[in-house]
Amino acid sequence: MINKQFYTSKWLIPIFVISVLIFTLLTVGVMHRTSFIQHIDVASLQLMTDYFGTPERGFEGSWFNTIMTFCATIGEVSSVMLLMVLLSVVIAVKSKRTALWSLIAVFTGSWMNFLIKQVVARSRPYNHLPQDHGFSYPSGHSNASTLICIVIIIMTVSYVTRLYAKWTIISLALLFWIGILSCRLYFHAHYVGDVLGGVALAVIWMMLFLAIYPLFYIRNKQ
Image (cartoon, rainbow, N blue to C red; front, side, top):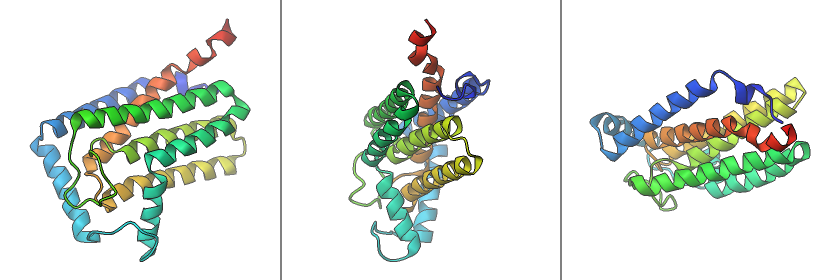
């Protein structure tokens, strides 16, 4: 089992409630095109466009563009799902039920994000790249990367014993997560509200799955 502090923590409910409030405010703001959300999204898009121009995805040019391209590629929902399958195999060495729990959490969380995206049906920024198709809110890259990053942190804290290895894995996971979120704004694939919405939804989903985690071990208790 994972560390008990994750599914019994007093912070579970507050984090869930705050994430729900943030996601609700963002979703209502996007769907009703409130001036506050519109102002933040347009201003941030203009800021990124003025500073970076209209960069193309590709492993050439500046080192920063190469890093952003790598993050955009590895952050694709399909890439994250494949990575999650491989990760679940590793987790299964320690606990098959925990591996199943993590796999279901990430796959269903990503699917929920996709369904909400179809309902909200927000168009992407005007200067997005052709390969970034589909609707914009909430961001699939941001959602999927947040889901798997949370899983990696939970599994690392629970199963990795060496402190140096533990902090190295967590630091790398957070670094890639920040890179994936950043690349969505760098390539103008999303507004900042889309990115925050994807993150908030992922946190909500993982808090729910942490709450029901003990149910995956209910037979053992009986």
